[in-house]
Length: 394
Image 1 (cartoon, rainbow, N blue to C red):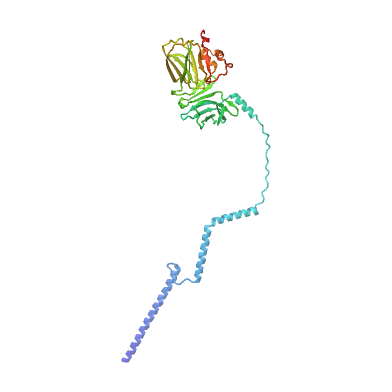
Image 2 (cartoon, one colour; image 1 turned 120 degrees about the vertical axis):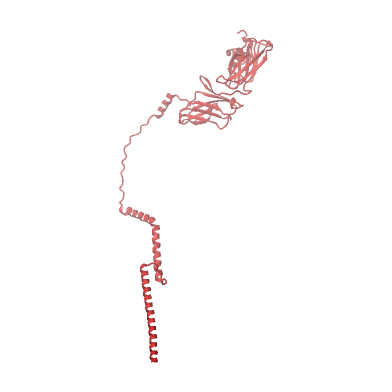
């Protein structure tokens, strides 16, 4: 019985091992099926899938082909516009060469133009100029503080005007649309006298008026510019109160005829007046060479009495710009009937005779007394004897 039980116990143990092995096999089958199912499910979704095996050579070829295709597509995307332009140009060229035919020649009909009629332009301009009678004119001639000169004027618009100084052309300026022009020389003018005129070019028109300019060596304040017209002179720039030396008296002659003659120097072309003891005696004009002479009847002057002789210089408006007073005691007369005069630059016998003999027509008496054959020819620093006795009985 015991042996029988032993056989039974062995069979039981064998049966249990089989059951365990069978259960493990079933579990392995179930896990394998589960793996296959999960692998298939993940492959179908293509999510969270990780390659389970290394790339083969076939997979590498596939990847290279895909990269090549991607590069070609990128190249096309980058250069599609220039490629399109080239293709368009090629298409147009092919269309012009093979499709479009030659352009037919065009016939241009030119209408008949009548011959131009030439008008006498020059005659028309000349007639206008003669009718308007326009001449260049001065507006301003001014001496600046630094000694420079400014000349302004007017004429016809857009025309050339030449500036003449002492007869020589120094510049040519063009007028603007309003007919105005300005000339300002770069270099300063030296002290002295100048005569300025204008000359219009094409057609030739010379200014009717001239400007006399005196540049003083003492500066612009003592300089003068005068517009000289046929009716007289107009002051363009007047001097201020002059400095010493711009007006001076060089000689005073008292004649036995009761006439006093004063000679001196002043500013060119200005007027000088003479007064004795505040009594006005007359006036004269200074020459271009700055000399003046003035004679007047004063009657008998008593020896030993004191007198005040005053010479004043005036601008074009009559304003006094300089004066010189000379006090003297009348000496006793020497009894000489004649006096002497030294000729200065710009003098003539007519003016000398008017100052000393009252009348310029008596110049022949002075010429005869001094043996002058040609009365129109006298020289600076020439000493003349004035025969005063010739007019004592006048």
